[in-house]
Image (tube, rainbow, N blue to C red; front, side):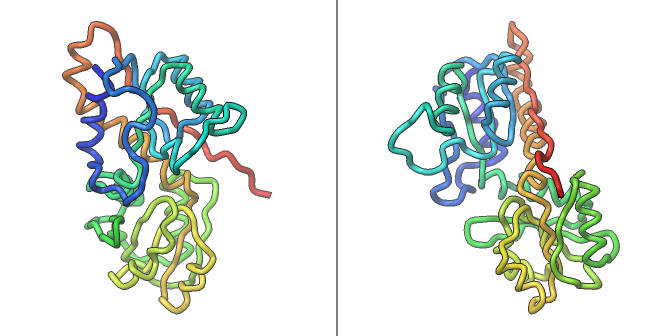
Length: 262
C-alpha cells in the first residue's frame, strides 16, 4: 500500500471539490509514492500524535486540520510550526488532510454529529461553500434540554447555550466555527444550531431570530472525525490489508478535552 492508495480512499469519503476555496487540503507533507507502514488518524498533527505514530510504526498521518494552513515564507525550526514540520520530516511521516471537504461530505462530520445527537430525517443544507446538516429531535425540548442532550451525547465536560426558546424540534449542526450560519439555518426552519465556537455578535441574533445557539467546543464537535475516517479506511482498504505481507494497522488517535473550568 502506498500513500496514493490511501489518498484515493480518503477522496471517496470527502471529495476535493467539496472544500471551501483556499482550504489547504490533500497531501500537505510527504510523497504520494511512499509505502505505508501504518496509518494514524487524528484531529491534528501534534507532537503527541507524532510520538504515537513513531511508537506504532505509522508512516502516514491522516488529519482533519492541515498543519500548514496559510502561505509560509520560511520554516524556523525554533518556532512552533517549524519545529513540528521538522519532526514530521525527520521521522519520515506523510501528512494528508481532509478539512472543509470532510465537514460537507454526505457521510462527513456534520452528518455524523447530527446522528450522534439522535436527530432523525437528517438532510444537507448548503450555504455558500459549506454544507451543514439539519434534522429533527424525537420530541420537543427547550434550550436547556437541548444543551444537556448535546453534552451527554458528545460526552463533553460542559456546553454553553444562548437563547431561551421553549420549544425546539428542528436542529441544525455545523461543527467547528459555525455560528455565522445561525440566520441561514433559521431561514431554513431550524429552531437551534449546534456548533463548536460561537462569536459574540451571533449570540445577539438569538433573541430577534427566536433561535438557540449551543456552543459545544471546537474539539467537542470535531472528535468524531477519528471514528468516521478510521471506519471508512478500514472498509475501503480491505483488499490492500488482505494482500499485505506485513501487518498494516489503521489506528485512531483520540484526545480528551484539555481544559479546566474555574
